Length: 632
Image (cartoon, rainbow, N blue to C red; front, side, top):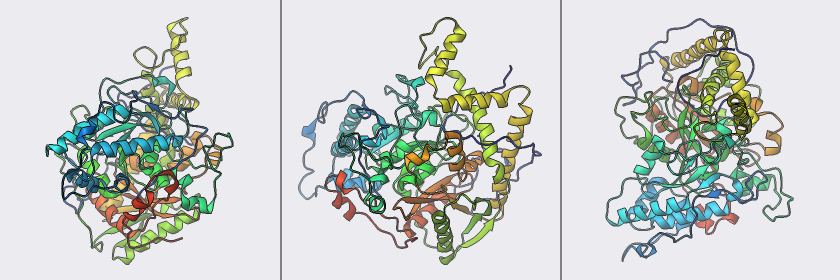
């Protein structure tokens, strides 16, 4: 049988559902209307009208899905090993020292200012985060904890601060990275047996940019195998637990049994973290780091952000380099950002954005720093509400909050109108065909010859190939490879892959038409409901779950647009609910500016997990509450 593949690499998460739709006529896309915000125009190297190239939270409980001894610690050492603790002297007369726990709930900019003023040291901050990682290992958020690396980076950062040579806002700030980004000298597994033991010889571009700014790499976070999933439940290292499962807000509504007592009678009602970047979301929510990288192919950053009460941002395709992101779907993969507030997201995006010679799909034009103004007047904004997103499966609580958010914009003077994205109905099917096709091509590289797992079966080369892939991939990955190869067979290529590409163009056209009509951003749900218990989530297979959970997010990836999920309120079960804002291509700054305004208007409650953290009350006392509450 002959198959036709794709030539690039990709990664992210793939969703499967349904059967391909019939062919649609090819459409020439109109040029998007100019953005009314400075610095948002599409890059000069784009063909006009063309498809873009393609406030706090910890937790605790021992998880059945977690590794028996928790995450693996990379070359573990004692807290003070290889670190000059004599350098941790008081900052001098007149400088007030701050409790480390207080800083864990602050923004990146506030922590950076405290570091610069000597109110806290990078090593103290790093050690506190490492301590929290140990205390919350039951979450299974991390696959590998790079303790020694982080402590050495903290020591170097401390020396720079003493010399007055800070590298920027991220110098000395703990961050985490999803385990599908290459990290030099640190195992990168994609939560798969196929890559167990694989240590890349280089850093992904986004990882290198973070390290160049002095960020402290706390470790690699858990995910669905090769990022194919929407719950972070299908990785070889086990499922990730949502910190909100153990929050005071949720326990008051639905009490959990005490966990971690070793009697094997663990409560099974803990909640999924979302996926496939659930480990990164749980790590940020648990205060073990201030920001984390995820990948977003169909919603893999925004979905867990909504479930964990975080800001989850997917940049415009081509704004941030994919080099070093282990490939899944080349034309849709983007590195995503998970933080606790929009300003933090903008800081990280300003560091990551820009051209990369190693990724030909990145923008050629220089990228300006992403400084977000304080928006006070929204009367000139036009907010679109896609009518196709009001689906029967949408929970009543999410629907109510969506409506209240639209009313909030309208009450502040913004124009809120209903819009139509008519080809939304076909987007999941189109996404399934295109994703599995690219997955089949990209997964072909894992053959047991060059790197990763290699089967001991050596009867023949073909037998070794087959055994390697059978042993290395789980059922989800193998199923998507089979689907993709079917769509790419010579006799099926025109009827499935080519037609899906045409439908994708129509979906892109829908967004362009809406934005050309004067709409600034679209307001939609992020997920159908709040996070569900693990026991309920696994009642349906990965393919069905992924199709359901991606309904509001995957079309954005096919169109290459920026989107951000913002936590807005708690459900009746005391769990976070997020709403999504979608912007014009390369108008990421405009989108985040509006998101920042919206975030300030919404009084999203602080997760309460005092029992798992020392001095937690001091963290709560230092949180800033906002003005408007979206109530159920």
